[in-house]
Image 1 (cartoon, one colour):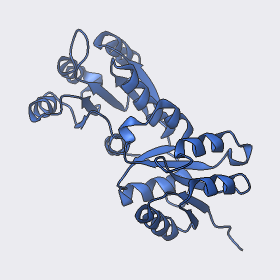
Image 2 (tube, helix red, strand yellow; image 1 turned 90 degrees about the vertical axis):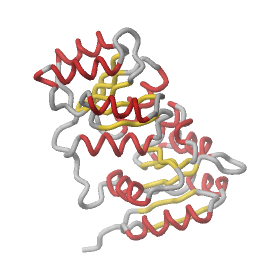
Image 3 (cartoon, one colour; image 1 turned 135 degrees about the vertical axis):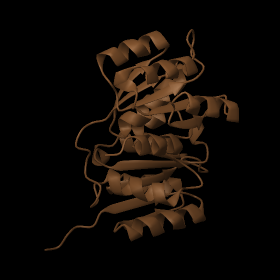
Image 4 (cartoon, helix red, strand yellow; image 1 turned 90 degrees about the horizontal axis):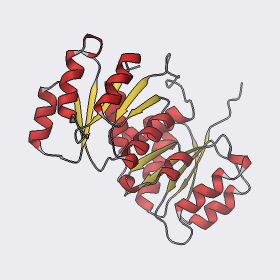
Length: 252
């Protein structure tokens, strides 16, 4: 029986990135087409569909932002998965996260790129999780909270948000999440104090806690870990780093 190959289109003006994408995707079994000119890639996408698009955002001429916008407005690509690649992942807007299936920081981490490519198009060995994981995000910064929420939802998680300790503790009374993402600089009770309370509650004694903070110093990190946090991510948040940490703390 003939099995139809998955197809992938790579649009990136950087030849080294193109070679990495082509090599990795080809090794996974994709039939890969590479285009270094964004306008030519956009024109091709008006006529042909692919299972996966690996798209650089910063390109001369037609930007990756415009290509992404065109793709999501075209019914032909309703089921196509889009991997956005950028050297400025921490500056990606909510609009980009809503339209893309994932955002990767350049230079690409080959293992992460390969894992996501397999997962997005359902290649063998990447079956769905048996139960949707529940994440509680505690952060009073709207932009950071939105960024984390959109990223996690795109990755298949159910996300609940809180902006302070009071809301967070109320949420924990309703449901025990699989992961807590906690900002240290909260209004009122700060994140360190809240982390201590979380560890004192029997229901959340073993719930993984991932701390995110702009205070990326060794004192903040060591104090967070001393009070029971499991991992630490500095702001501005790099999406692939945060997702990698979150996945490692919530094994399937």
